[in-house]
Image (cartoon, rainbow, N blue to C red; front, top):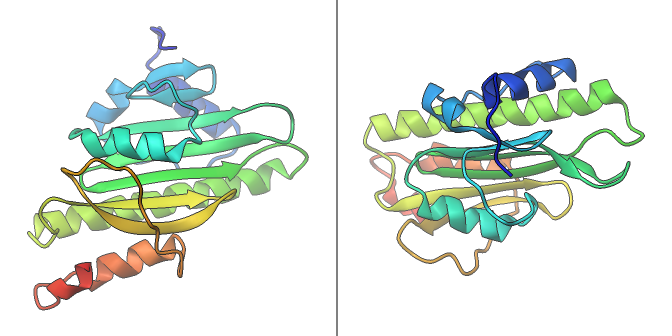
Length: 195
């Protein structure tokens, strides 16, 4: 449930992540930072959906239909062993949905390092998408859906922005790295790379 905070939701989230030894934060735009609202004490989102952060099909469809940048970032779960760090991020034509274990009986510094690494990869993907859009190379009406999930696997796929998202088939051959490889294939001389 959304709430109003004396500090911005971004400030609260940033302070929380840094207190957990995160050395990298999502490079959200200022507008996206300002749109974040507290959904629960450890979870912040720019859009509200009555679905668990782990319901990737529901979130993918919400972000597909959203034209503005949007995000969900923080922690959700129940019990000692089922807490996860979530980063969902719609940035232009990219939709990233991620879930990684955090806490439980593991090494907190190692968990923070792993989650920070995920954020660094997400930041790099968003930057690459910006470059492709600025050069006019991003395929019109296409979105890239990237899922990085420690429970159900990782992969990516192209989706049409205008289509209802009833199902999707991820290319899991390279996991998260496959999205980078697919973006690197986009060039003026290779439009077939998008099939």
